[in-house]
Length: 127
Picture 1 (cartoon, one colour):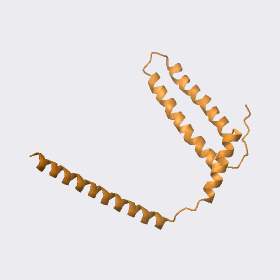
Picture 2 (cartoon, one colour; picture 1 turned 45 degrees about the horizontal axis):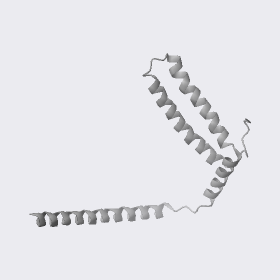
Picture 3 (cartoon, one colour; picture 1 turned 30 degrees about the horizontal axis):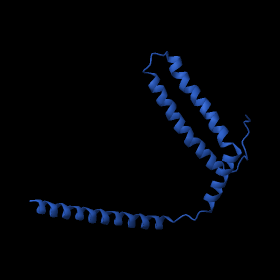
Picture 4 (cartoon, rainbow, N blue to C red; picture 1 turned 180 degrees about the vertical axis):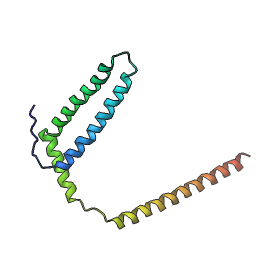
């Protein structure tokens, strides 16, 4: 297992963010394992070192996977495509968000009114 970084400098942000994201998930999982192991009758050294060892092994696995040529090339290409995206301006996002909120409130009101009228109709029909 080589510890060289494949295509150093290319797709750096995507690879770092992916690595940190998966690393956080692994860290939370190992911490949960540590908390579960506290309920067992193992000694403190075992309760601590098993999750820590698992974290180290999984950290090396994550590093190896993000530097595997097929995965690294995918992440490099993904970062390249993200640079080509035409992002909306702040004003466009604000207007679009406002429209979505207005439509959601309108549809919720319409659905609530329909539900109320049906319930009143069937209450009248059954009485």
